[in-house]
Image (tube, rainbow, N blue to C red; front, side, top):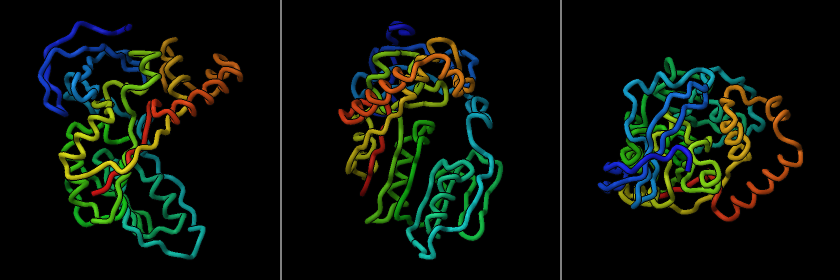
Length: 284
């Protein structure tokens, strides 16, 4: 497979296995800097992870990658007030929390260490500039949407989830998953590598391991991969970074028939549990 190097002796940061692990050299392709980073695949828990976390990891995020722009807020669509206590972890400027407010939710909290300062949206949304470890209280629903893979301490994060989650609560963890069909097709050009921001590409096995250690359990897994697993990966192969992958570049590269085939194949892979993205429903 292109980009695969010789195995190196390393320790898995998930299950602790120390062994010779296959290593892959992956380019930064979101912005297209093409800086290279090494990842290794644990032979025990199947988690793909960056070999060394960059000390300047924050430098690899920017406004084009991470949404800090204040979303528009509209009045709730219903007069009914939904009291469900919600925490969105790694929520950025809070777009999803605003959507929940518009649906009638009134107990909405977010946390994100990368926002410039705390955010208050009247009347009921509070986003704190902090990690999940600094949060207090109890929540009925905790959401980590495409954020866990960016965190260097996934076990500690899930331990914090267990602490904050109500006994009857639920945590939704949405992440890219490994292995999958797109990885098999594209190797280091699979767009969900997102080097170096994605520190971990978890497998079902590694997620089961982490949840059990944190006192949690996976109730169900729903695969929800998108056509981007094919379209963006193919454009990466052609040297087109994600920030340049607009409708025009897609239209100029793929026929409608090809796009329709990607849509059909994506649905088939999700049904088979071999797409590249999934939502883990986690409970105590």
